[in-house]
Each structure stands twice: as C-alpha cells, then as structure tokens.
Image (cartoon, rainbow, N blue to C red; front, side, top):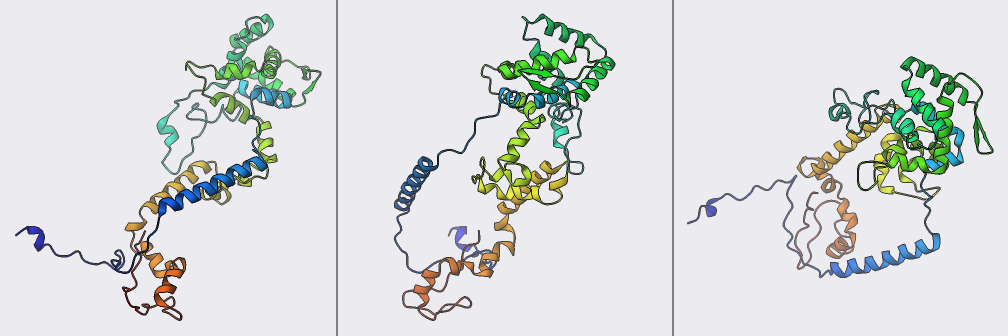
Length: 347
C-alpha cells in the first residue's frame, strides 16, 4: 500500500481556503468576448484619434530653447560654466558635488557612485566651442579661460553672471552691460549663437557610441534653465499640477500613475529634498504588500468579510436564492440542484 494513502487530509483553514464549488457551470466563450472587446476598443481608439488628433507638441531642443528665449539660455550657460547650475551640484551619478537623496543610512546614489560623469563647464560649454576651429576669436577665448587660475575664472564668471541678469537680445545679438569679464563674454555669446544654429544639439549628442541615442546632456542643460519649466507649467505638467497624469495641455494622460503622483502632493515628499527617493520607497513597499496579500491573515479575508462579491455577482445570487433570498448575510436558502454558497477564493 502506498504511503500516500495514509496521509492526513489537509486541514481546512477558514481564513485561507475556499469551499470546493459543486454547483452548476455555465458555458462561457472568453475568446469570443476578447475579440469583441478588441474590435470595439480598436474602433473607438481609431475614431477618436481621427476626430481629436494628437495633442503632442514638438520636442524641446537646445535650438528651440535658445531661439525662443536666448537670454534665459545665456543666463543658464554661465551657471554651467561657473558650476552653480542644478546639474553641476546634483551629485551622483553625474558628479560628487551634491548631497544624494537618502532615507536614513540608505543612500543608493552614493553606493552606485558616479557612473555617468558630467563636467558642466567642459561638457556643456568649453568642449562644444572647441568644435568650431574656424573661429579664432572663440578659440582664443576658450584657451585664455582654460589657462587662467580658478580664482581668476571665478572672478570673471561671477561678474558676468551678475551682469547677464540684465541682458537683452535684439537684432540677433546678445547685449550684456560692460564689465570685467575677460573671455567669458565672448564664450557665452559664441555658445548662444552656436545653440541658435542647432550645432550645439549635435555637439552635446556626440559620443563614442555608434548611434547617438544618449540625450542626457542636452536634457540636463535644458532642465537647468527656466524655459522648460515655464512650458511645463503652461501645459499643466508641473509636479504640483499632477503632471505625470496629464498629457500636453488639458488632455488627460496616464491615469494609472495616480498612486505614484499622489505621494508628491502630501508630506513629506511634497517639500523634501529626498522626495523622489521617498516616493520610490513608498511604492516599493506597497508593491511588496500587494504581492503578499494572499499570505497575510486578516488582510486576505477582507473580501470575504465585506461580502462585496455578492454585489459583483448579484445576478448569480439572485438566480440561486430566488426572490426574497438570503440577502447579504447568512447562508442562502437551498434550491434544487445547487450546492451551498461557496466561499470566494482569497486573492
């Protein structure tokens, strides 16, 4: 006799197990249901796309930014040169200058270190200008700036950054109040012209890769200015406008991101320098909790206790119980050919 015949039956756990279904079954063609739903959704999507079109705007590039707001570009360029921009002080993975986001002793940015190094002065300003060999004046300015001491560089950039706050742009020319800027004025003016021509976009995308698909540098440069932020606010895409759930303008976007976006609107994430990491940690915790629901006594039984399944399957229970049947509590009256009410399987 096999040892399996002597095994004790598995103990029934009310909080976990469900009564085996012994009632009748209905034929259900799920493939047919899926095809019908697919056709209906395809017709709706195609029809609405034809009627309303796409709300997407053209991508923001360094060229479009410097053309639309050259003064903002120049003001941002000097912060890249003197190391006071958001990217310059960001920290890992770009540099060691900032304080990485953390929760207590957990600092993954520091653990991973600088694996995408960016020197804003060289990568965003000096190196791109060095690709213009046919402009001796610009090359002389770059060489003079590189040869100067860090103290002299800081004096030039500080003076220019203060003056460029009052800059104007007329007739295709950037005008900055006179001052002792050394070669910095020539550098920023040349970079602005380079950006407006579109050459700076290409220089920032240059890499050792065969395909130029790394847009990190131009995106960081653009994000350091005010132009992109103003467009986001105008189109209701800013963080305090639930931007992750919006499409351009008033169009609804990724509604399934509401839970992720929610945490940016409440403390502590809404006013913390560690907000991104805090939201990430919350979502990881909620994801783990969701995965463990079938194993958590009490939590897994909420559908059974609330009996919400009777509302969802109300037509079935109406047929089984008949008029004036068992209601929402207790066991339903038995009808011929039916089994006792099965307990739903916990998720």
